[in-house]
Image (cartoon, rainbow, N blue to C red):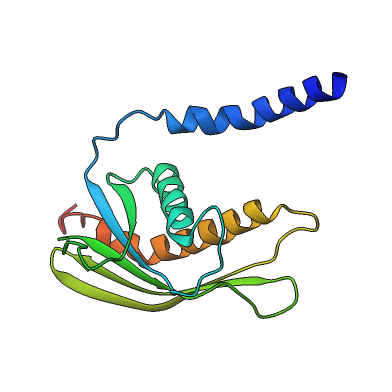
Length: 166
């Protein structure tokens, strides 16, 4: 009996943050479309690469105080053509050296109709011993989102130059 109650309490404390996150306030910032093109032969899982990239870019935008709200979507035939859009052609995660996961994705950014090609963006992650696989995958995609954001930020949010006379 005590075991069931303890298990129920532990499960409730683990699920509370997820429920609180689901009841987010509406975001009135303009959207930044992130279109993700996945390999058709992806391994099954509860959370797809598109969802993990969406969560990672939301976190990066919040940390860096972006004036836009990133919205990731899976590429489809009816995907509209956006004025400002990031496209990520993902490859399956690979383990090149034992214990190290590698994200690779070809990234293009279209800002006000002008296309910029970042080529293949790569991020390596070595998980800690005993780290949960979900946390490992979240860290891989978060690192990839940060690497992509480092390249995209100067084009998305250009800094205004100071006047020459000052």
